[in-house]
Length: 178
Image (cartoon, rainbow, N blue to C red):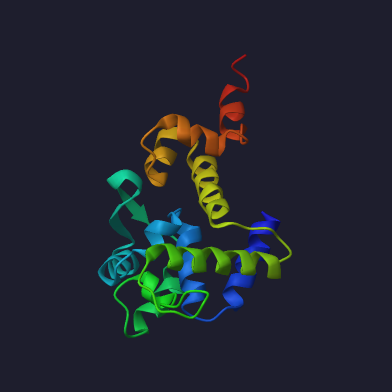
């Protein structure tokens, strides 16, 4: 949609690693915590093979697929000195003190996504990218179970909340049957 295209255009104006990290989030449906804790070997696997097994919320494993953003993500592999995506977000708290805490890095990533949204004239939170991804999977497949797997949800009811506003596939399937 037009708003998402504006957001992506703004993200693509940013340098690395911001562009790669935000596009990774956008095109994979990963949670902030999953992105900041993603290791270099996991990023390499995702870029080179197009998929990687991740441990998500509650330790639930899922396969993360990166269909479109590999070209945006690949350049962060050329950046040296990092072991996890969180390292690329800096090790400094708002007060200037060094930290290794994932929560601070997650806060930084949330701020980056919000700043990109503001520059595009939008209010965007990281979880909005996840919901957009889930809705896109559902629209392409019409398969709620495939969407559940793509998002790594344990409960189908959680996935249903993500796509509840999109009756498209169901309406098309029922058209002509009633």
